[in-house]
Length: 397
Ligand code: PMP
Ligand code: GLU
Image (tube, rainbow, N blue to C red):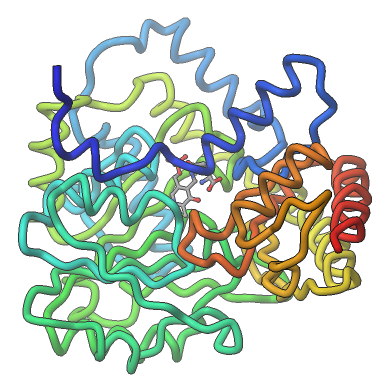
């Protein structure tokens, strides 16, 4: 029996695939160092777990309103006001089963055949495939490392056509770890407003920032741009809650209403217990984030310094998220035991097979000159993994 055409055009999430492969190798007794997983290696804070346990004990285990409870929406509204200076009301918020699901609901509500969606590369792996799953066309626009991988107003202007429906913004960025400052955002907001295109602003790494980088939400820059922006966020990264599956989108009522209609026919509300935990995550003590970020910060400096010390490798210093994104193109053309390394997937496969180190190849992010290493893993693992990488790169001739 043939599968639907839409399945043929997409691939499984490469980040999840690398992580699964590394975990499977570990389970079979192989000592793999995993730099693949884009998830905090910290446990969810106890106060959040306790809120979930209480929800279960209280019998908070039934269907709830599809777009989320008022209690949680109010906590999300308060968060956006306090952190981002944006005022939303309840009809402008929808809670879904992870930020990935929020992004997917947006894609379902907004994109269709004939639409183009602009995606700056390097991009997070799911953006193009979510566009394809909804019969629209991803328009990939290359950004430049010397420009901090930021999409400029000029880049955006050149990519816009009468078919452009939206563009996807991700700051701080997965995979680059770099971000947009206020003036870069102001410049692209102007172009979006001029052409009346939606901005999908994925702000999931907002809280994981370094060196005084200040996250700015594009929707906070004025009423015109707010009316076109879907702000996506969640707790997976900030509160180490990847497995709980909760994210949200905030934006224009008509789009949020459409997403809620779609969600009512697909997943319904996200988990009731997770919603109670999310209220505690948003309203309870926030010290955990600072502790986690301080630890990421130490690892960030260490990993970037070590990568830059490797011949043929250069790595920009991230200002956010927990990824190092070294340029490894100068190693292409070399070989190991006569086997050539010609691109990022050859290099990632070589590291996994020969050095037992899992990284994600840059081509998964539309950037074949690079590989991605997540430093959401212990310092001991990072040291061991980098020793192995240095030896493996040194063994290429
Ligand atoms: N956006 C980006 C840029 C991410 O890295 C992730 C990580 N999975 C997500 C969205 C999705 O997060 P969630 O776990 O909340 O679905
Ligand atoms: N966002 C994380 C990553 O990029 C988790 C994996 C995924 O959801 O694709 O590694």
